[in-house]
Every structure is written in C-alpha cells, then in structure tokens.
Length: 267
Ligand code: AMP
Ligand code: MG
Image (cartoon, rainbow, N blue to C red; front, side):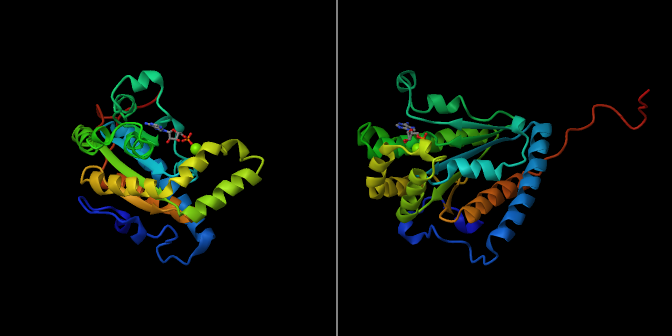
C-alpha cells in the first residue's frame, strides 16, 4: 500500500500515475469483494476499540474530480461500521457566513474528537483546487494556503489526530463514461449537474492544481495517497487497507478496569 503514498517534498506528475492500476492483482471482483468484507469486519472491530479507548482522533480526507467515487468509497469502505462511531462532513460551495471567515473556520469545527472517525467528503483542499482554478481569490492569497494547511494539520496531529488523505484518481475518459451513465440511468440523473461539464473542460488546470497540492502538502503527519480509481473494486480495497493498517499500528487498548471485576456476582 506504500506504493500509493506521496513522499514529502516530492514533485508529482500525475502523468506518471496510472488510474487503471490494479496493483497487478488478477483475482477479479469476487475475490476483491471477499477481501473487502474481511477489511470491513476488521474496521468494525478497530472502530469499537478506538471509541472505547477514547484517545485517538481519525481524520480521513477524500478528494476527487466529479464522479471520482467519493460517496461510493465511503459507503463501501465503512459498510458494517457502527454509524455512531463515524461522521461524514461535506464541504460544498461556502455559504455567505462561511465566506466571511477564513477558509479553515468551517473545517476546524468538523475535525474529529477523541474516539471519533470523521470523513471529509471534499475539504479545505477545495480552497487550493476549485478556488485556484476558478480564480475565486488571487494567486497571492491561495498561494499562501499550502503552508497554512501544513501547519494546521500539524497542529491537529500534535493534538492527537491521525490524518489520512486520499486523492481518488480517475481518467478523463472514465469520467466521460460515468457522466454518461448518470444521464442514462433514471436513478442517477439527479446527480447530473450541467456545471460539472464546465469543471470537466478545465481538467488540465485541475490536474496541475492537484499536482501542486499533492506535492506541497503530503507530510509525515498527514500523508496523501494517490488511489487509482478507474476500477472501483481496487479503489475500495486500497482505501480500506490503508485505513485498517493505520488503525492497527495505533496499538490501541481497551481502558483499564476501574476495579477488580473478577469476583462480581450479578444477583
Ligand atoms: P458536490 O460535492 O458534487 O455536491 O459539489 C460540491 C461543490 O462545491 C463542488 O463543485 C465543489 O468544487 C464546491 N466547493 C466546495 N468547496 C468549495 C470552496 N471552498 N469554494 C468554492 N467551491 C467549493
Ligand atoms: Mg457533483
């Protein structure tokens, strides 16, 4: 799984990454489903432990182009996990009140507390992606944000947060197929947004913005993973695997018993 991790201070050229990659796995979908269901069960166990220990805070950041699979990844990776232990925070176009504040204001309010897993469906990275590509603020304003973000995430990490950031990487071609599917499927039409076509037309600009974000903000304390996402089954496996392995490494323990419970008899 380390092959997907972006090392700190490394220039990223997305042309060198393959959105079709399946890690050489030939197993096919049935095997992937089996493996994912094992990971789901392990994640369920780890989440309970995380909650019981009440020490660590887990922040999962998901970024992708439209149709990149953020929602579907959340559904598949967290299947079976206690809904009381996980929260999803969505970041849409900022409200007027949010725009009156600095861009991290709405984000900071949503970060996980002890024992909690929070998934960011989009995030503060929109403030160096859409905001940059769409010229919503001048370069001298967004240009400072990479440093802000690194410092912000460092503070969260030093205060007990484990941060994992995933860029679900699909190709331009794959997006075309998925947008077409939205048009063709009556149950998916509601998701189709004509404005997405305008973002699609800016694909090269978005890739440059992603490359900069990935290069400048993958740190020891908050690494980015580039997840090949043309194949949904592989995307789910990569994300689930990285989250499970990271939680396992936290070496969590159930809290100490307050008193000796061995001799207790329930009348
Ligand atoms: P969706 O996730 O498809 O519901 O769309 C949410 C939209 O909000 C996307 O087009 C994002 O680019 C946009 N968005 C999120 N954060 C920001 C931001 N800080 N500034 C401008 N647009 C944003
Ligand atoms: Mg959308």
